[in-house]
Every structure is written in structure tokens, then in C-alpha cells.
Length: 404
Image 1 (cartoon, rainbow, N blue to C red):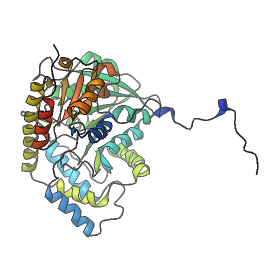
Image 2 (cartoon, rainbow, N blue to C red):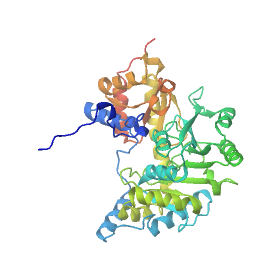
Image 3 (cartoon, rainbow, N blue to C red):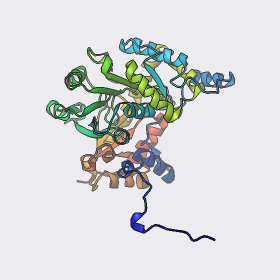
Image 4 (cartoon, helix red, strand yellow):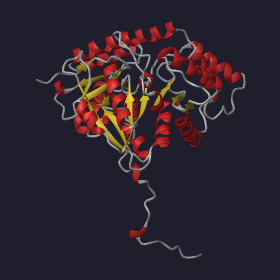
């Protein structure tokens, strides 16, 4: 047998990409695993624990039975692309060509990374508001860009708004800025960007020749008369905006993984190339069900928002009674809280105690910031749950004690 030749240890390759060296696993998904391990009520991960609409499930079943089981067109079935274009016109007044400007992906998560890979080069920068959905930073790094963070500041009182500082935002724009990611309604804060804020972002994008990538997955989950405005609908933004959305939140089908990116033709062509080599295509029968979902009447969306408003107003008082300071969300289905009253060293220590000893899982706020210290007093709860789930959480939260 031939001798095995080995290289000196100082010459061995590590076989790992430098890009992943600073990544952690998803904290949100880890908290779901902790909830399962400890039998806790899962208010961490944002998936509903109630059924999806019957007509959508029936449409998926019919598509499968009808042998819609092979590849769809790579960038999306015609029926779904037509429905997406129609809905963009109905809800945001944006005219979209379904043949040239829509790419259907495996969820909005894939739509985001496909977009960033399609537009970013090494040395580019991507502006991200924080607290942020945890994928945006790693997505930027994977695309070769450098994330640059701009803070949203929490309100001084529970009913106030998360705010951005115009000077800080302007300072983040410069010649290397390729894109800005705007998530509205926002995860994790529940902030809905107002028209004046969006106009400021528009003006800076035009001035510095920057692309806006908007994550609008919660567009129909709004409260207190708040209105969602798509950045692409503002004057001067149609040719410099990529609008990302999907089925997960609006139709309570987070496991279906059907999302899309709407962009000008040139950018769409690039997104489609990346998407093709990344995932080939989204599930064909679920795309047909998606066309049915996007054809639901306006009453469906009003009922959706009201149902979540009831859930919000169910959970927030229970959290406040337990001792949390809550920042009332205007959209999405999360509430950010301040945990200062409980006397824990930081959010990580608190969420470990909460899931193991109290029996409720939440997400530590530090996971939504590039500097964990900025979120060390914050915790996020999801309220996309059945009333009895929220009742069970409220009962368990009664174990908490405020420390004077």
C-alpha cells in the first residue's frame, strides 16, 4: 500500500469561505428549537399556528391532482406573474409588465439574495436600517458588498414611532453605495415608513444614483388607519426600485416558499439569471395556488388586518402587565419590548430564562443589530398565533417579577 503523503499543518487549507466566518445560525430559528426542547409557547418565530385559507389549500390540491407537478417557467408561471402584476396595479398603482418585470422565487428570502447577487460587486455598500431582519446583513456579505447600518430609534413612549435621523441617513450615502434595503412594514419593530420618510429616501437615491430594494412582505398587515406606500410608486423611483414580496405572511403559508421580485426589465434579467442557477424555480403547484390567493377579494385583506389587530391588542396588555415596556407596532405581527424592568444582564440571559423557566420563547433583540449591545435591553415577540396560544403565553408570563 502506498504511503499517504500529508502536507505540513501550516500549509493545510481550511476549506471554508471567509464570508461565513462571522455568521451565526439564525437566532430566530434557534429559539424555535429551544421552544420545542423546553415545551415553551413559541412567540419567537413568525409563523401562524392557525390554518391557511381553505380556498388556497384547495387550489394547491387541485393543481397537484391536475398534474401541475413539473418545472414551471424558471421565472414563474404565467398565471402567478399576471396576478402579481395585477395586484401591484390595484394596491399601489404601479404598472408592471408580467413578462419582463416579475421573477418568482423560492420565497421572498431567495428574492432578496438573488437581487443582491444580481446587482452588487465587491466594494459596493448596502444601507440597512437597524434593527433589521437578520438575513439582510449576511445577504449583503454573500453578494460581495459591505453592509452599512443606519439606526431607527425607539419611541420615547409606547404609542410613539420609531424614527430615523435625516443627517445620519444622508451620511450613509456616498459614491460606493449601491443599494438601500427598506423593509416596510418593518420586522422587527412594526414601523411603517411614512410618505415623508420615503420621499427622503427617494431623494437620496436619486441624488446618489442608488437602487432601493424594498421588502414589503407585510404590506397588508396594518393597524390604526396606517397606509402602506410602496417606494416604487413615488416619482423618480420606478426605474431604480426592486419590490420584493411573497405569499408567506399575507396568506399564512410560510412553508410554501413562494415569493417574487418586481424590477425594471434590465435588473429583472439579471435577477432571473441568478435565480435560475440558485434554485431553478419555485414549486409549480403552489404557484398556481398563489394565483388563486392573489385573486381573493378586498374583504379578505381587511379581515386579515383586523384579525392581527385583535391579536396585537390581546398580547400587548399581557406583556405590559408582566412588566415589559412595549413599542406599539403599526404593521407586521411583532412587538418589540424593553426588558429593563427585570434586572437581567442582557437580552440573551433573559431569553434563556424566559424559555427554560417561564416557558415562553422570544427573540433576543441583539440579533437585530450589528452591535449586539444596541439590542441588549430589547426582546421581540410574535403574535401571529391563536387566541389560546396567546392566553397560554400570558398565563406563563405571570411568573415574571419586576425587580426594583
